[in-house]
Image (cartoon, rainbow, N blue to C red; front, side, top):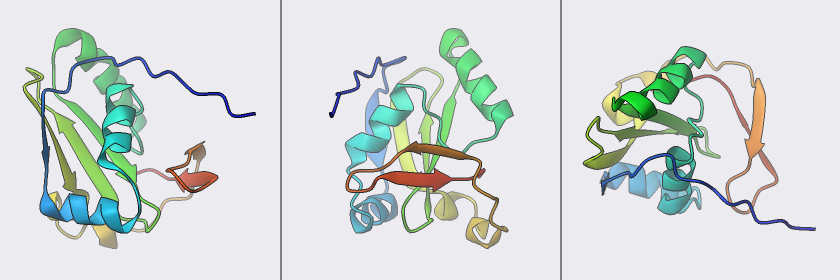
Length: 127
C-alpha cells in the first residue's frame, strides 16, 4: 500500500531561480520543479560524489553553499545550488554550467533512488 513519506526540510532554500534550459529539461522529462527542490532541501544530494555529500552535510550546520546534481530520465543532469546565506537556490542544466559535461564517460549505476513521478525506479550513477 502507498505510504506517504514526510520530508523534513534541513534548510530554507530562499528565492528560487530556474534557468530556461533547466525548466525545459524538467518539463521534457515530466519532472516538476518542486520534486527537485524537495529532494534538495531534504538532504538527498543526488549523484554528487561522497566527498561532496559529506561537505553538504557539514555545510548545513556551518552555513556554507549546498550543491546537488540530479540525473533526469533522459540522462541529462540538473544542478541545484543553494547559496551560503540561504538567500537563493539556483536550478540549472549541468551542461550549461560545465561545458562538455555530457561527454564524460557514463559511470555504472551504484544505487537506486525512488523514481521521479510516473516511473518505478531511476538508476543514478556518479556525476
